[in-house]
Amino acid sequence: MLMLCSSWVDQMGNVHGRVEGANPNAEALLIGSHMDTVVDAGMFDGSLGIVSAISALKALKVNGKLEKLKRPVEVIAFCDEEGVRFQTTFLGSGAIAGILPATTLEISDKRDTMIKDVLKENSIDITEEKLLQLKYDPKSVWGYVEIHIEQGPVLEQKGFPLGVVKGIAGQTRLKVTVRGSQGHAGTVPMSMRQDPMAAAAELIVVMESLCKNPEEFLSYDDHCSDSSVKSLSSSLVCTVGEISTWPSASNVIPGQVTYTVDIRAIDDLGREAVIYDLSKRIYQICDKRSVSCNIEHKHDAGAVICDSELSSQLKSAAYSALKKMEGDIQDEVPTLMSGAGHDAMAMSHLTKVGMLFVRCRGGISHSPQEHVLDNDVWAAGLATLSFLENL
Ligand SMILES: NC(=O)N[C@H](N)C(=O)O
Ligand SMILES: [Mn+2]
Ligand SMILES: [Mn+2]
Image (tube, rainbow, N blue to C red; front, side, top):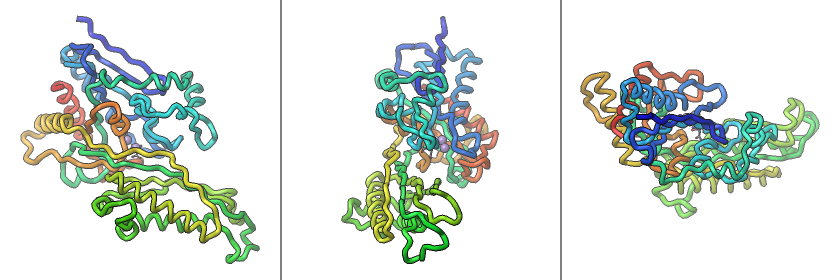
């Protein structure tokens, strides 16, 4: 029997490899993760999911089982999940899920280079029409599965190499620009300054206090029920990862300061209430300091709950992998939430999604210290293989 396999790079730069299996017309399983990284990253974030999927298919091929796959399996290595360059994320998976607005191609980076120009530089001549054509037909897809490092400390604390993801926190990315009056560091009296740097410093500390103690800041009647506020305190996180100033000279009171905001929470209503309250405070503080500010929404992604059927299949696959490695395991394979975002958030707009987490040392990620034990990489591969064998 002719075994149909194909591989290609699509118009957004995603890399695909597909095996048709025994029923080429059946709905396909999509499996993969992202191939991009943050700056100064580790080597497992994203790539482990792609390698686990490819190696499991390789093992099936070696064992002569590839042809027996119940349904087509397509591995996708997504481009730009992190959103480091353009601040909007899930560019690869968002194209497949059909959630990117046509204006996406015009989004530009800090050097005003647009996404479409970057693709052109890499000999991909994309148009709005071609972007919209990348969307998969939901009827052709059975589900999406992603194997990914946990990027947190829970599995290590529990002493488990693998865990099933219950859901993924929602996230918002803002760009805040504060403008004041540029001046001479030596001659402008403190009382006469409109200093955007000092204003930004106050704004960032206020945001940190709000996110550390949301219940103290968010009144229940303002856009936020008490259950949302309570759930916030366990999952709400905020980060300023980038800050820049103009003209950035030590003896000049800056004219402008720009910084990024990354806010996440399990509860979408709670996150929206935090953004609403934070924005109000930003404008009040800037007003008090006679500086102006602009808040740009760069990215919003709602929280995602993983599919229970896929999750239980991933749990059984994890069991069978661990049994192969360690003999009988006593405890339940852990189920946990993800504070990190994943392509599965975008893919949940197309199909049901499931995720399997792999323990990483100290929960460290987005750092060269990121590390996964060889045995845990092995467990991830065995679990992926078992999942595919029992599709
Ligand atoms: N879109 C994202 O959330 N990207 C990374 N995975 C992150 O968690 O920041
Ligand atoms: Mn990442
Ligand atoms: Mn990742």
